[in-house]
Image 1: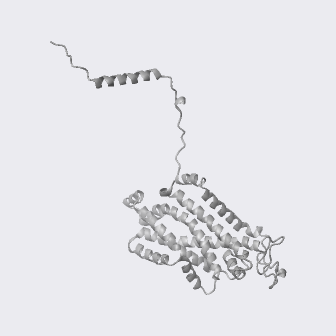
Image 2: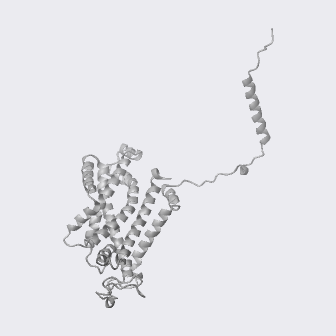
Image 3: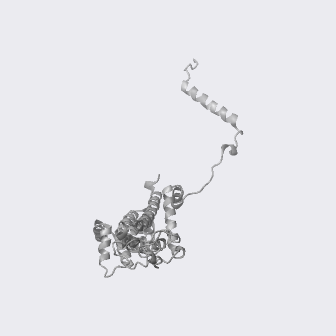
Length: 334
């Protein structure tokens, strides 16, 4: 019987040599590496949506600037009656007014911004006017949010003809420029007042919240937790109020910060047009801007100061709202 002279497969020999090399390396390094030398992994735990958003927001200069402006505005609006140097309705410098030579008193000690055409301290009126401006903007936004919440919930929860009717009404309101619609609503009042401005601006904001909430509600209808609740026989009202609505409010609340800036501008515009509170003893920035138009050529500072306050505050709310929306929206995260 002849011996087997079949040559060895070179690939099999190469594999054996590699395996032997790996075994040798493992044997030579056995017991030389400790866990401490290999390093440890720090358990940081999970991060929720709010925590993740805050990490991005605190490094966002636009958000920090907007937050600072908004915080200063809110604090001044709250404490303005106590920090105002003079009574905003008192004609302190009336004796220094001369219709021909000095219709508007200028800055002097105790009155750094001067006075208006009736001798009332301008700085005090700006400080106290911030409270009225904030009050009108917040109440109008709350009114628009409430109306949009009702319409958006009905449209998103029921669908069908209810959704069609509500959305056609919303489309009609959105087709009209917001300021024109607010002016038309304010003009229906028998007498202009602060409440007519609040109601008019609030109605204008309703379709914005309604459309946004309706879209969020429709997205929630196809979620797994909603389908599971329906399969278990949970009532529609419970599904809407417990599952769909709470998970749909996030984008709407963020939008409220942007709408607040628009509400302040619209309210100031209505007051400028004479559709707000006619009593100028209770100052408001838009009202002050309207009263200054007769003296704009010779004394533009009367219009500049309230206009600058409106612009800066609206900018603060806008920067904060846009930053919040980017931080909470997964599609726009960077």
